[in-house]
Structures are given as C-alpha cells and as structure tokens.
Length: 138
Image 1 (cartoon, rainbow, N blue to C red):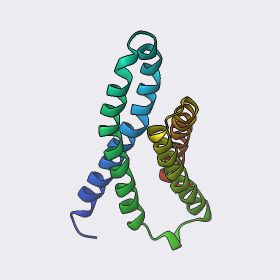
Image 2 (tube, rainbow, N blue to C red):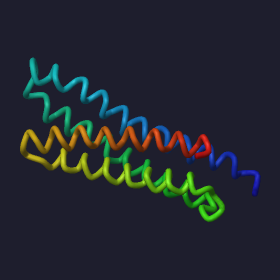
Image 3 (spheres, helix red, strand yellow):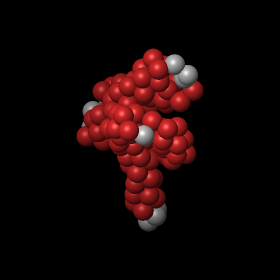
Image 4 (cartoon, one colour):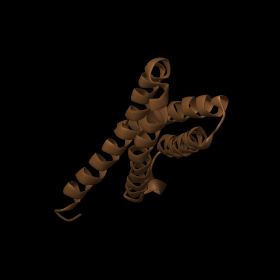
C-alpha cells in the first residue's frame, strides 16, 4: 500500500456518497415537490423533471462507476458469504433502481410514471441499506 491509498480511498468513497445522496435524496425531494406542483403549477412539472434528470442521471452514473471502483478494491474471494450476498443484492437493487427510473423517465402513461418512480426510489433505498450493511461488515 502506498501513501496515496488512504487519500484515493477517501476521494472514491466521498464521490460515491455524494452521487448516491443526489440520486436518492433528489428522488425524495422530487416526490415531495410534485404534488404541490401538480396542484398549483402543473406546467412546471416537465421543466422540473428535465432539470432533475440533468443532475440525477450523471449522479447515478458516477455512483455506479465509483461503486465498481470500490468493488475492484476488494478481494471478493476473501470476503464472507454475507458480504457477497449483500453485494450481489446491492448490485441488483442499483440495476433495478436505474431500470425503474428509466421506465419512469421514458413512460408516457401515468401508471408507468408512478410505478417507475416508486420502484426506482424503493430500490435506491434498498441499495443504500445494503451499502450500509456492507460497510458495517455484513
């Protein structure tokens, strides 16, 4: 291990946490704002959605990239079976979150938007919980 490793790890983990905070936290904020916009400023919804997407999707990509980088920093073969199961479930939750959010973004029906948005957030929250379990030593 060289002297730069702790600093590089700190940068990688910080970028990951910031990206996840934008992806997950942004979805929570948007979910809270949409009902008020729907009631009083319906015409603002497309602008808010497009603006959020311009920030959220790059954050999702950064979270995936830094997550893969973190996974490459671990000797998975030497980890516990609990770690491996939690990591596989986390990767699945991330993929499902992105897929559901894509359905929400591309969907034209109210049902596709509602179900995609709800599942996108649910799977994102599951990925967060699994990430905490992994860091705690699952």
